[in-house]
Length: 157
Image (cartoon, rainbow, N blue to C red; front, side):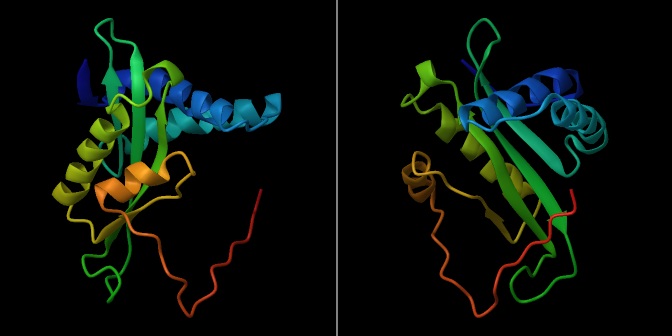
């Protein structure tokens, strides 16, 4: 097994594992939206990979991807909640079914946690599925208490 960070030669693999993650989450994607996402992912990875987007892989001995996780970095004006001005979000944590419960998700997460520390992030966050929650708690993530602010979102597409 090989644990490593993605590089620019991995762009097609990054797109594949992103869509594999969508499939595992049972997200239905219309062909026109799939094409749009695919196009944007190609552009995104070429611009952001290993700058403010990092992807960790575990590969088997044949080079097949076993497990993945992504880290996206955001920079904003520093404040009390993010004193370095930099925060991160973990996305796309996925281990293919036949490789689960073998520690591979822990390996990719530890690699991204170390990268987050290297990048001087104030914190990293994620949205945990019920399947992933025990792993994240073991790694030190804490469930957030609701603040006095109401989280809101406006969809533009």
